[in-house]
Image 1: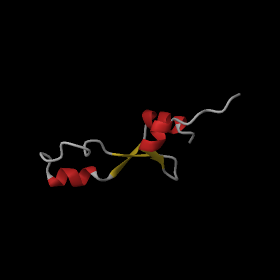
Image 2: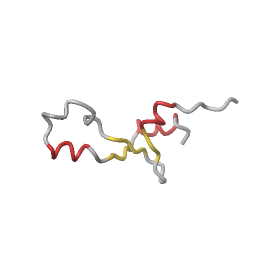
Image 3: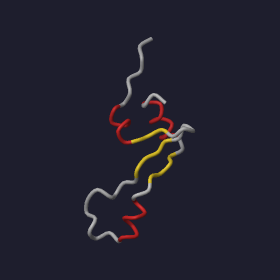
Image 4: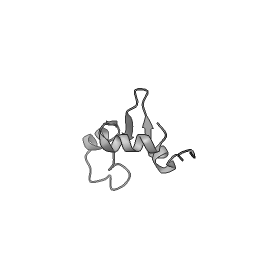
Length: 64
């Protein structure tokens, strides 16, 4: 059986933690930042731990 290829776009966007969970950055910080409040932009800096069916799917395609 051939090896499964790593999905490179997912590899660049997500990280797998030591416990096997999916870590991602929050959306909404890249552009159109002037109308957003400072509080909102500060809160968007933090990364998020994903759990659930979609997280399992991405972990699988990343070879985790």
